[in-house]
Amino acid sequence: MIEMPEDVFRLLRDLISEYCGVYYDDDSRYILERRLNRRLQVCGMQDFRDYYRFLLYNHERENELAEIIDILTVNETYFFREKKQFDALLQEIAPEIMSIRSGGRKLRIWSAGCASGEEPYTIAMLVLENPQIFGDWEVEVLGSDINKRVLQKARKGVYGKNSFRATENYYIRKYFDEDGDSFRIDDKVRNLVDFSHLNLLDEKRFSFLGDLDIVFCRNVLIYFHTGAKIKVVESFHDRLLGGGYLLLGHAESLMNISTSFTLKHLKNDMVYQKPRSPDMSISDENLYRMVWG
Image (tube, rainbow, N blue to C red):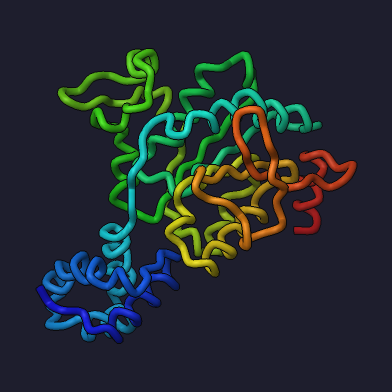
């Protein structure tokens, strides 16, 4: 295994952090060294200093950075993870947002950093399972991740038993088909979710998302440095309509990150809400954005 000098570790760490927000402290040098050794061999590099120059100047740098992200990002997830937040979505968040709209019957929910897709598919199943809540509303579920490999898995919708460790058998029987040792998600669920590749630090791509009502970004920001957290949360705030909600992981908070959201203590969980402009409905705010940007 090729050794990573300390000064090159810091250069690579900062480059990766600026690209995607993921930060490695000084104690993590060996982890980065071990995970990137294989990339040196693939790229035909003799040492990490040459590899760093390659990432700076080579015309293939974007493709190689994508390979690095696939190696470094954590993709641990499963269906119905942190169930109380889904209870809050059904019982409190979605009904509230739907009640304050004065026009349009469309709800847009984004799973940011969705990994292999269990989270947005969970939301889609709950939408299908609860017509008494959503009625004739059009619910659009978006899923995005920076890791292209796990997005391919999400689009295929085939999962092993580990993804179901918090899932009731009822949902497995109703929304999945057994495929050997795996389970394939039903097309009616898959068709509700639109997946896309997105780097959360790419502000230009954020504009293509359009306006949002609810953002799930759970257990993602814990891997980011403070500057990246601030930048991403500001982007969430910009895209959410007034009265919209941001749901983070239970180990995450906006303390020292943002004061633009209100912490709300719901019956089922604590979540963040973007304040609504006084006397302005969500549809009024939508029109305001169209006119003034």
